[in-house]
Image (cartoon, rainbow over all chains, first blue to last red):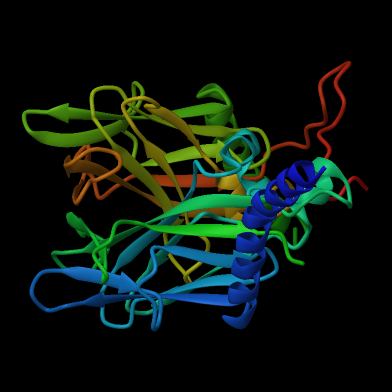
Length: 181
Length: 174
């Protein structure tokens, strides 16, 4: 009996671990506000970098009620593409049309000197309600963020584009959109 | 006479739009832009045409981009003039060399904007693969013009085909 109880407790603890991690991430995202800002810079040595203010993480969590804002204050023209990517719910993310994967509207922003800021709005409706009913657990969708900066001018005739790198140098940025609590 | 002149003007304007629509219909509802590599340079064109303006119905047309012999490419539609507006893009890879450029995301829904011009920019990866590409170069239109303009025009009202149900948005079933 004692052995059985021990097994039960251990099993419950193991199952609770992913849920705890997910809840912690939700709390972290809540503390960070519903708006994520990605900034692109020209380092002046031919390199373009981007980062989240004060962050070097390569995974960013944002609620589906929030917004994802990109800005390029000192870059002439930059192209930002948010595309579905595999992840914990990759089958969900890739099997659904774009509008159901967390983004509302275009998945691309072109930043120019006259319009250096753009916003990606996120879907308000709970994705899990659509897929599994009101009691379904929150669903995450993963997106890869591509950042290209014009390397040979600022006009519409830009010929060469360079992929910007995250300032932390740890790989691409992934946007994780989670259902709002 | 005072009434006749405006009527003639309206008839001409309507005729011009009808010609645009007829042109679009002649080119079918599917507009295909192909990207090629030629002598180290990258070019793109409409299949069988070198026009600088291409028409597409807002509610019935589809813009398909394909990169048959190019590794990875990005096709971007951006407002050609006026204030900055929504932009949309398709990413083409060797495993998935054809994709639809979603002009509906630009707000060009049926009943919406009558005519909108979008500049097409085609970027081809020249260093790396789809995942790691670090350098991109702009492809030029084969005709050597200043770039291709996609003109999205409001097409005739189209309902679902016979025996088909209208599409339902699961988020907004009403």
